[in-house]
Length: 418
Image (tube, rainbow, N blue to C red; front, side, top):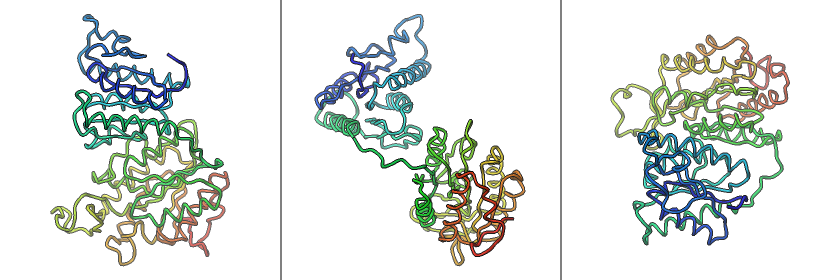
């Protein structure tokens, strides 16, 4: 076994040995070395792998044979430690696997220890199902196997060969980012796209590279995870809409426990905006509006629609956000665009309701630590004026300047510190 970068072929070689051996051979025929890891728990590998979790954990010992779920949990933990060790030793340039439900759970769970940018390809019989819990915040490429994985045939062979080609192509990529700039994480979603584009433009003019995240639940968590890796100089949280959908179990739910929470050991400046906090986005159209929402203001979008939050809901969400932001007051500033928080929340818009938005703002102010600055900008979230102000405040925070010194009065810039 050579100690040089290789493409890791991992999976349950007890039940899918023929298929993983095929993957290994197709990768090697393309000129890439491989490193094989068996994480099967039911029996020995059908070929001799470089690492065999089944033997290392002595799962074949009658005295030590655990229940199936315990065996899978042990294989997952051991496999993660093993793959991470190999990566740190410089032996991993990518990873690929094939499997059914259990194999997908095991292999992707192990792949997730690899950092962003390391190729991860999973051929799965369940790839057409909801993959949120499988992919999570990682850059895992899922390929549907179409047929079940039961020996090499004309269909599965073609799929697996394409998977081998895909991971080799990824591993052979030589693109390098341009000259490194300070990074700013920016959240956005469809209803505030124009505002996000303008914020990005202003931040770029100030010398930053902007990494945008779709605030769809997973997107916000991915940003927080990368922030914890030390990737960002600052975070401009333009779309905190995920909290509304989390509250109403909407389309962008699933924000996780770390959303808006401080980063241990680092104070990353964060500008927080109630982007999209006027509504929750649910999956229905004008043809099938649920009875419970028919009396509400509704913005029909596509297969999803935005329902106007009530004052009570707005206050509850504001309280949740304040509780999280209070964990790190020195590094947070809140900006409130007074003319609306989405394309539907504007004068004449389907969701425009200033009194209800005001309830959110009042509750947020009441619950926030007094050390957190809350400033109102007399503009709509999609207006150029707001984008320019948000970018300027972000820049001042990153530079370690007193952002308050530039926003004391409501002047020509339209910003008022209250």
